[in-house]
Structures are given as C-alpha cells and as structure tokens.
Length: 143
Image: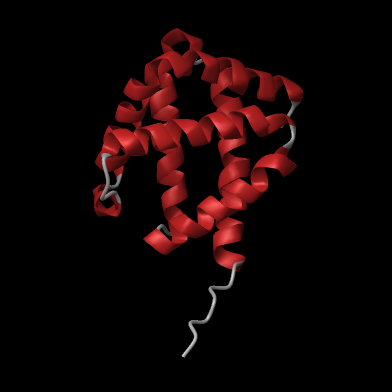
C-alpha cells in the first residue's frame, strides 16, 4: 500500500467510528445475505460480535503504517477462524460485505480512490490470514 492509500483508509475509517454499531449491523446483514451458510458460525450475541469486528478493524487500520505490528494478531485471528470452519473462499465474501458496508456508511465519501485503498488493504490482510490458516499445523492431541 502507498502512504496515500493508508491515509485514505485511516481517514475514511475515522468517519465510520461514530456509526460503528450501525456499520457492524450493515456488515453482518450483508454477509448473511451473501453467504447464509456462515450464519451458524455466529453463536454469540451479535452486538458483542459487532463490537469485536469494529475493534479488530480499528486495530488493523491503525497498524497499516507498520504491518509487522498487526500481522501476529491477524494470523492468530485467521487460525481461530479456520477452527470455526472458515474456508479461504469466504474471505472474498467478507471483503465484498466490508466494501458494501463502507459504501453505505460513507456515502459520497466512498470515492473510487477510497474504494481502491480499502481493496488493497483488505487484499493484503486477507492474503496474510489465508496464508496463516493454510500453513499453520494444528497441534496433535496427546493420547
């Protein structure tokens, strides 16, 4: 990502923060429309899930200037998601739902440049997460 793209992602996310609860609702509604088969993966309170989503996004967005600081957390998250049953193909659907959410939340501020910056950011993050999920060996249970 270029410094300009990082700035665009960070500035646009700052506009989402005040509507974080609504943004999380929009995201999960869209995700479940696109991929109803993932709904059973979410067994807890969706308000809590939304807060976790927005917290994770805030951490990632804040760390875009130094990816090494966010990669361990992203990789750990990827392994947990794999254990929940998430498969690599679903990352694209999540990205689609994220872009939809940003478009709805930002309105006219969701410019082509902002969209492209988010595509770049999510592409890098999802690639790292997929790599971690596919290349981390599960521990063997003791007999």
